[in-house]
Length: 295
Length: 246
Image (cartoon, rainbow over all chains, first blue to last red; front, top):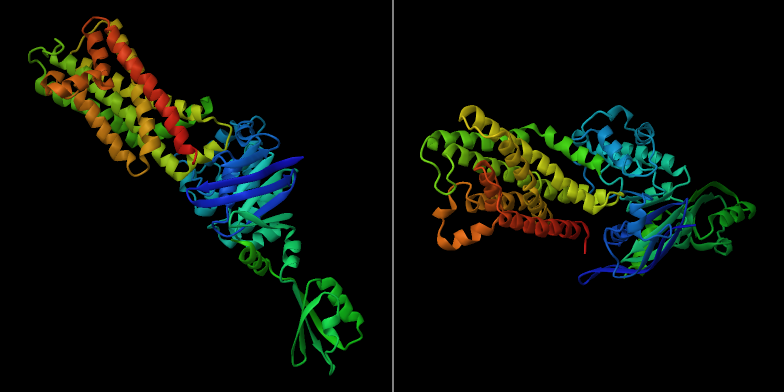
């Protein structure tokens, strides 16, 4: 079942095209990262997904319904970028209020536990620290037990510790077979928390796959080792190798298939030691994708 | 619907300073004016004793103030902070949001109506038949509806920074041209004609009619009903515009 379908969706603000001919289908039960720099069209796509903005052309469907119908039916929960908390209420009051808007919400204690707010339930939500307030906003997003949870840059302005706790909460919620779409421009977040990464730039999808696939498709990995022999001849003919660099006895191979290359190095009979394999980081993959196909 | 109303009322009444001033301002002005002008001749425009005429004026002043200040600036702030956009991503319909805000602000318009009346009875010896007390408060309370709707329109359209001055400006204009500060007869001719059609002057007229011992004229009710329909429809449209980005 498709949780989300964007079919040929475009959206402009005046002369600025935010999203151009977006086609994207997301299966139910997946956790998908929407990765891209500022201005890539992530937030606009999310706003259209939630019925907060109407596309100029194309259709958006959420579990087969229009976004408005899906939101009204309580199928969707969202954490938006600027969704500040309303003053004057405790965490418990806010969570209960939102729970009661949905047909089949999570229990209050469960919401508080998943979001890590059990200890803060009686505190005024507008007097919490930034990281705590983000947890309340997450609690509000999951309170209704939505089948689709949408998070727009949820960890912006969080410190490292809060961020780690946040993703643990998200995974706990995803474990119930729910669909999650989150936008981020933190590459490692997409790498660590999503089973599919959709890279956007200039209002288009420029890359789509697992984090590993996206890395492999661009720069590739590097293999470094020490070679105690005189000759480096033939290294460039090993499977997957795209470049060879030699600095004294240290050899650096660039490869599109790190597994095959490493195996070939071991079985080559060359006097090799200290072999190190480094996956290309998503950062360079990402820069590569957005640079070449961005505009 | 009820859950959201409970939430809004809870937030409003938790803001104690705000509630205090909503009540204290009209009551304070009533005491000031009635002690200044009380005991003088009957007010020529309504034929009522000054302390009775002023009771209705200041009750109206307080109720309009409550209806406008609990809607405009709050709605604008919640739009600006993103809270209402967040609510738009829940099953709570837009219509419910705006109707609830209007009704919640009417709840806060009731205490100034009741307390100005109470202070008039206790300190200025205003005596009315029970039916007139009840009729005046009930009808005036219902008639706060167009002001609450107007407040939400200001909140939806004015933006966070401007909503406060626009609300206060609207409030003072409606009060002055509504005959709440001085009789309409003292306004220049052109303004007097305009004032006659304003919801604030019709609002106070209802009260003056009831405490004068006669039913309000149908025309007064019709003008207010017209304002209610227009401003109510405007409130829903303005809120939709404010929460649905282009």
